[in-house]
Structure formats: structure tokens, C-alpha cells
Image (cartoon, rainbow, N blue to C red; front, top):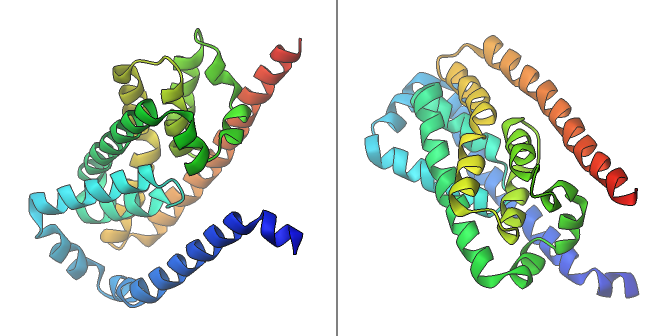
Length: 229
């Protein structure tokens, strides 16, 4: 009982997330099944939204960047499926820039208490390279450049440093291109019913992501050693 009382907040959040995912599965199950039955027809219908569709997709991407627990890859695949590799990437980059800008504003305005309640400051202690002003920008660009690294959580922590808004927005947007383009290419392949190619793209991306996670951990381990010395 003591354990349940101490973990009340975490348990409540977990229940809400599981419920959200269950409801989402029930809502989107049939549309997803229809999508694989007639992908070209669905794709053309979605493209008919034109500029409005771009705007809606960008807002969905911005929402995902702000609420880090949502999987961005699904939105990126959807973007590639509807608008192709380049068009989908542009919509995702626009949404990412909007979401990142809003995060920067709120973190600068509300500070550490906001981060602590929303994500938890304990996670920031694990990201040691943010404490190195000389190497921070290049290391952050590398982390955002490689698929598989925890980009969205980093977006919340970076504004706590002295990094300028222009630098922050450039890194958190432009450096995402490799991660996004691989997903939009896979999504486009699904849209044109080239399922074998899409599987190959996703497998390669998955392997690169594993490498990205390894590199990210090594960056932090290296900094930890330096601090102890």
C-alpha cells in the first residue's frame, strides 16, 4: 500500500496513457485496415485537402513535439504517405519548428518548476554534454541528426541553458531531416504499394536508430568520466 501511495502519480499517468492508446486503437483500427485495402484511394482523398492538409499535419507534428510521449515516427510515415518524401518532410519540419518554438518560450518563461512537473529534472542530470558550452552545439546537432536519439526530451532541457533561440531552432529543426526523411520515404513507399521497399527502409532505419542510441549513451558516458576526473 505504501508503494501504491508513493507511486500514485506514475500509476495514474500510466492508466491514462494505456486508456488513451486503447481508445486510439479502437478508433483507428478499421481506418488502418481500409488503408491497406485501398491505399491509393485513401491517399488521393487525403491529398484533396491541399494547403489545409499541410497545416493540419504540421499542427499534429507540433503537438507531438510538445507531448513527448506520442510517437513522431507514425506522423512522419503518414506525412510521406500523403505528400511524398519531400512534401511530407517539409510539413513535419514546419510542425517541429512550431512545437520547438513554443517549448522554448514556455521553458524560458516558467523555468525548472515547469520541466520538473512535466518531465522531471532527474532526466536532465543524465545529459551531461549540455553542461559543456564549447561542445554543446555540435554534440546536440549530432544527437538530433541521428535517428533513434531522444530528441523531444532534449528540446525541453536545452532552453534551460544559455543557447540562443536562433541556434536552438536551427538545431532542433534542420538536424531532424535525416530522421524525418527516412520515415517519409517509407510512408511514400506504402502509399505507392511498394511494401518490400518500405520494409527495407524501416529495417535500415531501425538499425541506424540502434546505433544512434548507442552513440548517445557513449556521449554521456564519456562526459561522466571527464567529470569524475
